Image (cartoon, rainbow, N blue to C red):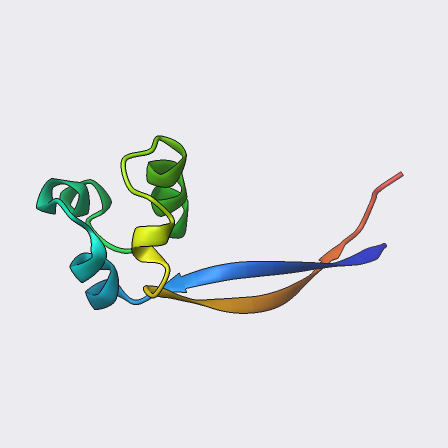
Length: 68
């Protein structure tokens, strides 16, 4: 058993919408879904720099249990 620390981004929909250069990109997201935003960054559709003020970081702790 172990505890794992993670950091998650929680996006502000309005700020993210204002930061996106192209309304078509917002339509791909439809709402601020962190996994979709991350995918668009990896695909170089948007840059992380352009959305830097659109989210807050939330630290969470997960409990992982290895079954034997």
